[in-house]
Length: 117
Image (cartoon, rainbow, N blue to C red):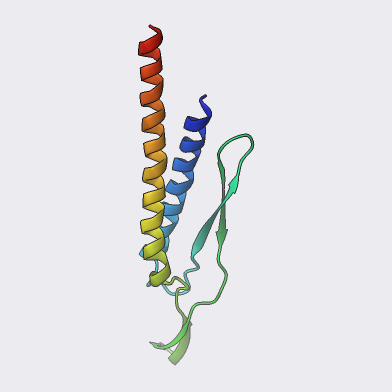
């Protein structure tokens, strides 16, 4: 496979995973005790990106809530929407950049084949 396309496809997959993680974190921001996930990217040999998923174990804020035994301290989600929403926008832009790389590689390959044919 053409290295540019292989790298861009790997990037599409990686940023798709990051967007999915952001969406899951945002969807569960109000769930008691939910622990957010984080996607880490690393270089792959010879081309591309490796995806590593990890769970962030930092405790969420505690709040008092009414329970059957009276008031109890309940751990909330450790998701910070002020962090997740901008990250999701950036990840969407990085996804689009990789998609554009594939489109341009495909266009250049098509032009080359037309020239040679």
